[in-house]
Image (tube, rainbow, N blue to C red):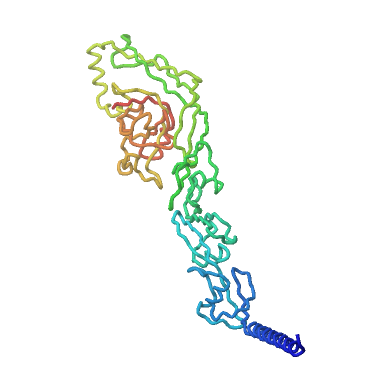
Length: 411
């Protein structure tokens, strides 16, 4: 190769190297230019920030560049068509699905809230301290979370004689409601509705407190009157052969109280402490001579009114009872009996107060030393074989005193 050829080859090599250097310089300059002209954007995705340098012209192009697909319910702080500006901040939150059931009504929500508390406030769903909630409200929401809410309502507990109490419940059974509010029951107490029934709105749970007590009392037993015919006595006359004596019985009662009020009593045991002794009366059957009968008739003329209280009518059930007297002629007395008789308007009316379980009210009776009367009144102390006879005034009541008398129930 001659000198001229070698010189040409060397020149060509230098030219090529010079071109390559110039091209590299152009490329470098272009890269520098491109880098300098990029916009700097702070992009926050679900709370995590990253700084992005981009040539994207719009927010939509930037999201496509970052491979972010914005859903219908997602949150984006800028519109997709907004132009990209240097120093721009863009916030993106992906929506999460949450399934909420309120009192069996289910609904699906999409939210970008971070916690359940934020979500409930966002959707204006009110939850009180009395409601039953399946999740902690301060927990972070995860996609597909299920939240069950049972709303509480007020019911009333009426406990025996105590005042009614308003309480909150989410609709459990009566038994659970009472347990939740520390209401203890005794084995005999009554509850309505029943313990296994479910609570509904405006329900009143009524508790009847039942108490059982035992009591032992002694009660007198009235004696009967046995009548025997006696042909040694004139007909129409009677003679006491043997006085009667009351017996004594000891009774053990079980007394049942409901809310402090006696509602029933049952005899558990009965022991006879003293037997009663019947009164024996001889009844005359002897016919009196006719002349004596005439004499007796004449001697008794005009005495019918005085004997009305001592002569005893025939027939009827006879008892021996303790008698006292009372009057309606007193200050503060209404004058009306238990059967509606106005004793103040009828001060001389023959009325006696009785125990209706012994002598029925309205019965016609005869009382030894008092005469025929009507059983038309009752009294707090008139129990068992006791009667109280009505007299016109206080002096008559004091004069009558307290005595044992024979009593006949005529009808």
